[in-house]
Image 1 (cartoon, rainbow, N blue to C red):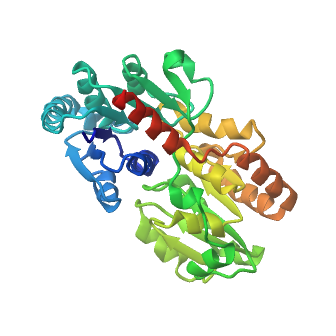
Image 2: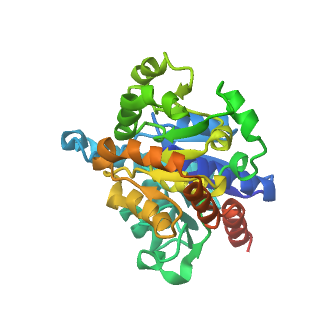
Length: 364
């Protein structure tokens, strides 16, 4: 009889793309498995999951707003409503297992599943576990983690280091650098800088790029710039006069962006880190300072300690980021050292390992 699995979570690409990678791996191993995603209404997963060919249901839920506390007034009501919705969804779908990947919808879905003694699994992408996952981990069958040292957050005997699931387009990158550069309408005789600030955008990074965009050409550099949603139109207008700049609010074919890049500037979300390890790219991380438990700094420092990347604090971006980028772009030796060291940290089969573990448990 075909098994049924719910995958819960989302909010950002860092949660959604690993979730889709796990779903794809499950379907590759057991094609008749029925998979239902549960996400948060109005969030990115409601678009990206159906594009990947899976059904998704949305909850009326939001996360804690750290910058505007007034917006948290409705949170208790939303949480109560989401638990009612979860009860309906789990009751009608009747899953054999539930996998949580992080994001607003993970907690109510896994909490209810655990109350009903449905096997639950967690994927914790970051080097510093979130509070919800720590609580859920107490009753999870297994917790899949990206790095060592996570037993300080989870029961050691149920914690497995798998790494982070990376999209197959990136793990099996087939596009050449020349093809990739051509697809962005750029020249193959200049150093290419890729700037990625996540799906919403990174204001500190974007402002530095916008302020210095006129200097790239004289330095022999060209730019692929994913601005994110916030103020995308303003950045598009800023880049318009420059033929050595490709700009978009979201780059769908990230395999091509990585293939084209000589160096990368990025936030330090767990999935960005995992993808950059697989892509073997020299990178300057600018961690998002308001990430829960400052986990992005922990993610970046894991690579910095392995001499595999550079870090610029968000608060120092306007003063230091551009000069750091120029220095790295000029230093071939450092680029090669970073490429070699970051490649040694790459994991390409996390999705398959997780899929096998979940399926073997529910089949037993």
